[in-house]
Image (cartoon, rainbow, N blue to C red; front, side, top):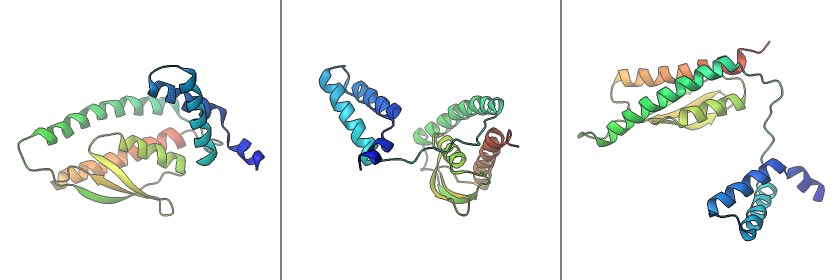
Length: 171
C-alpha cells in the first residue's frame, strides 16, 4: 500500500500546491507551511490524477505563437462584445447549444482546445463525447443566423489552429 502512495506522490505538484496555499493565506508561517504541505499531500494521495501522456507530442512553436497572439486579440474583442451584451438597453441575447464535430486526435489536444474556447467570453464547452469526437457548446449570442455561423466558424478556426499546433510537426 505504501508503494502505491509513493507512486501517487508527485513532488512538483506537492510543492506547487503548498506554495499556492501559502499565497492564499497571505503570509509565510510555519503553520501555513505545514498546513499547505498536509493539504497538498492529501490532495495528491486521495485525489490522484493520471499522468499526462506527453510521449509522441511535438509542438509547432511558430503556430503556437501565432495562435497565442490571435487568441489574446480575440479575448479582448469577445470581452468587449459580452460587456456590451450585459449593459446594452435591450433584452438578454438568445443563446443556443450546438453539437460540433472535432477532428483533434488526442484527449490532450481536445483539452487544450476546450480550455482556449472556455476562456473566451461568450461561449463554453459543456460536454465532450470522446468516442464520437464531438463537443457540445453553449453560445451566448445566437440571435441571428449570422451570429450562429460566426461562432461555428470560430470553433472551426480553433480546431484548425490546434491541428496546426499539435499535428503540423508529426511525421
